[in-house]
Image (cartoon, rainbow, N blue to C red; front, side, top):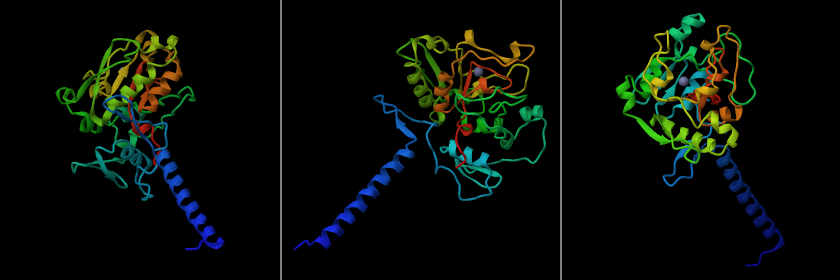
Length: 292
Ligand SMILES: [Zn+2]
C-alpha cells in the first residue's frame, strides 16, 4: 500500500488523538489518586485528604446538604447513599440529618443531630484564625453516628482495636487504635511522616498521652472521641487546654507542621477550637473533605 502525504497526515492526527487520550486518562488518574500505597511490605493503603477527592459524592442532586455529601464521601465503607435529609447505611438502617430543632450552643453539644455536627467548617491547613467564641468545629459529635460505626460499647469498640508501632525510627512506643475505616492505616501514615520531621520537633509527638479510653468528657454526659478508638493525645508537656485557664485565652505551642501531617491523613486538631485542646487529634474525615 502506498502511503501518500494525505494518509500520513491522517495517521499523524489519529496517533496524536490517541496519545492525548492516554495522557488525559493519566492526569485524571493522578488527580483522583487519593488512595496510595504506604510502601511497607503489607502494602498499607491510606487516603491523603490534602488531595482532590472529587467525584466521590452525590453531586448530581442539588438538594442534598453539603454536610451529607461530605459524610458520604468520608465514610464510603458504611454509607450507601444520602438524600435531602437522610443518610442510608449499607446495612439498611438510616439516620436523619436535620431534626429541625433550633438549639443553643450548649444544646448542640448535648443533643446534636448530624446537621449540628457539620454546622461549623473546620479550617484545614496552617492558616487559621484564633477561634471565636464557641467556634469548635468537630467538637459537636452526634454520638449515635460514632456508635454505629465504631461500636456502641467499650467491648464492641475493643474488638476492632489494633496496636501499631508509633514512630518506629524515633521511639519504641506503640499505640492502640481502631482498624475500622482504616483509621489504623491513616495513623500509620501520620506516624511515618512524623518519623521524618526535624529532630527538635519530635519531642511533641514521640511521647503520646493516650488513644482508646471509653469515658465521658469530664463534667458532661457526652462520650469522648477517645471512646471510639479514633483519637490520640500527644505529649501533654507541651499541651494547652481551655479548662486549665480560667480566662480561656487561646494558646498553642504545637508546631503547625505537625498539625498539617495529622490533617492530611484525616485527623482534626483540638487546637483549632475556642475550647482548645492542643494535644488532641481525632479521625474526622467528614470535616476535611469538600462536598463535591
Ligand atoms: Zn484527646
